[in-house]
Image (cartoon, rainbow, N blue to C red; front, side):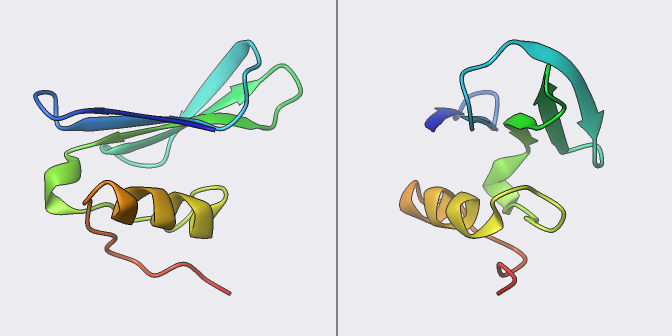
Length: 81
């Protein structure tokens, strides 16, 4: 897993797996999940992160929430257990 934060763009990209990109699905204007050839999530793009990130509907919610908090980004929705 790789975490990339561009504060100037107010964006984060989290690479879940190093596989070729096949397609992406926009959850909303700030959140996109990218998928690999096997139709499993391979990455997550998050925009406008300075206001916090809604992790609902994201894959690997608990891991993503921990990564965001580790990098000082507010999580708006707690991970489900």
